[in-house]
Amino acid sequence: MAAVHFHNVTLGYDRHPAVHHLNGEVASGALVAVIGPNGAGKSTLLRGIVGILRPLDGSIHLGGLDSRDVAYLPQSVDIDRSFPISVFDFVGTGLWRDAGLFGGIGKVARGKILRAIGSVALNGFENRPIGTLSGGQMQRVLFARVLLQDARLIVLDEPFNAIDSKTTADLLALVKHWHGEGRTVLAALHDMEMVRAHFSQTLVLARGPVAWGPTAEVLTPENLMVAMRMCEAFDDSAAACAADDAPSRAA
Amino acid sequence: MVYDALIGPFTEFEFMRRALAAVIALSLAGAPIGVFLMLRRMSLVGDAMAHAILPGAAVGFLLSGLNLFAMTAGGLIAGFAVAILAGVVARATGLKEDASLATFYLASLALGVTIVSIKGTNIDLLHVLFGNILAMDDQTLLVVAFNATVTLLVLAVIYRPLVIESVDPLFLRTVSRAGGPAHLAFLALVVINLVNGFQALGTLLAVGLMILPAGIARFWSRDLTVMICIAVVAAAVSGYAGLVVSFQTRVPSGPAIILVASGLYIVSVLFGRVGGVVRQMFPGRHLEA
Image (cartoon, rainbow over all chains, first blue to last red; front, side, top):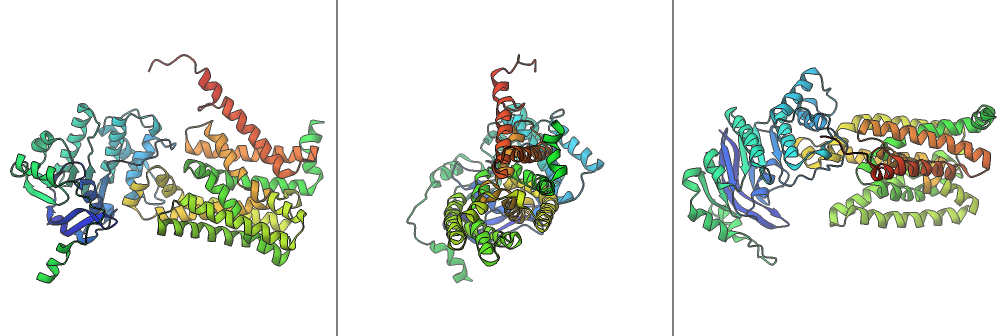
């Protein structure tokens, strides 16, 4: 049972592909690291999975999950930190699936929110406006919200960027906890040590798939070299991709 | 003496009572909208929209004279047309929404002034541009109250997605499709309230009773709910004080109201608890943690 199924997916912007012809599937309950150099298309791929970006070609199937079963933590969150909202209310927005437009936030829900804040070790911060938090604290808040979303598929885009080791360890424990609960987790990462130690599956991406499989087999110096070289081939006057037509002709 | 100055005008004259009722209705609905405009960095969009409704109101004026009901309907149509056109042009061409809106509202303002001056006199033009809250009849007051009620109801419905969309639009997009409709409904509320204020304050100042109270509230609280309450109170107080000043000094009512609000704003900038100038100059000794 696959949680995510890629069928000849090409994702990009304004006809220029950032991820080219990706096939494959992510097993339900898998813990997958997506690695690759800057500009490899990691964020683009994740945006495609959560449905913010429509594929230029091919399709992505979420194995019966609808968009509410997906929790997404983007890399560059365009959160308006100056907006007057408390940590409690902000984390509480993770309950959208249950509460929706009008659902009340009752005693049970309040308890859930407090527990989520507690599990990222931010007790006592409930009434602080989000504008007063540090970068690491904000990341903890975002993880607490993902926690509340209670999603089957969790997509994290470089969640440990500019985060100190203590916070990283805490949040990584949360990720592994989600994995233990049988949720599917995809994370774009840069720290190879962390990937080797904690992620069973790895996708090496460089504008197209370089290698995909068990981390130990995939994370080789050769593959990383290949990925390095394949990156950043943006051409303003590129011709239409010929490979796009090939499969249909074969069929 | 004090009674004569502050309460007398309202017990004595019906038009003053109507004006007061109108200004309170405007405050209740317009100030919360203003707070969201400010927090979404759309303060000047409100201003632009205020100009955009002019040709619609002018056509209403051409068709049926100074009938505020017709002018309201015309204003609503023009406002929505400009908002939607500007939005469509921005989405379809990649021109930024503010630039696109600026073009449309300038064209709209020019068209409106042209239409008014074809038929009306300079007095009419003044009336349209600056309003006259003291000339409010029962029918107009009912329209104002009705619009205010609708505003508060709709705001209650879209409040949650509107807040989330303001803080973290990407998150809302991943969990719900309510963001787009909520934004459009909010724009509609902006137009409705501008048209509403239009009757009392005219096209040029209508937005004042929305934005100035919001600016005032920003200096007194970091909490959204409190901010909205402060904005409503500030708007109502400005409205009341403006009416009194206008009654005593013969200053036109619209400008008087906005001037009082500006006074409150200056006081807030200087002495506000949150980021006020004095507070920043003399912050007190730093805390322990």
